[in-house]
Image (cartoon, rainbow, N blue to C red; front, side, top):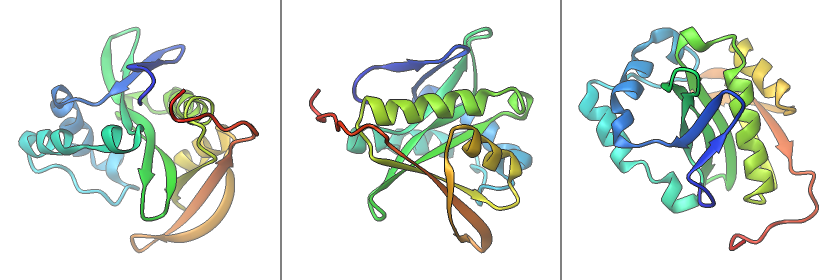
Length: 178
């Protein structure tokens, strides 16, 4: 996020993750249901969560990153969403993770759509992908709701995975300096 400090949706504010989010990130990653389809392991303790956040360099290196999602109505951290750049694959992906009490309320769709729009309109990204384990029907449904289309299957850490993609329909690419 190099053009503004936050992104706003109807019900949320998305901002850069900070070390102050360590307790929430730790709690989010403790929930086995939240991690079920991610192949991630929970942080061992809050210090590991702080270390991760302290070393998270997507914003500085690539101008994108996972963002804290703050619900406007409660001012609470409810999860994260955002773009991530993978230099080995030279591609951007959309990701999201929310506390279970926020599932099935449209937060993932609302925030992911806004992040993709930001990536296309403000950053001039040409293509964004979304990955999911094939059994993660809820995440696949979100990818479809944000107008991504099936691209291919892949090995997701030993699981059957799918890749969805969305292309930037804008013919005008914005200069990174604008």
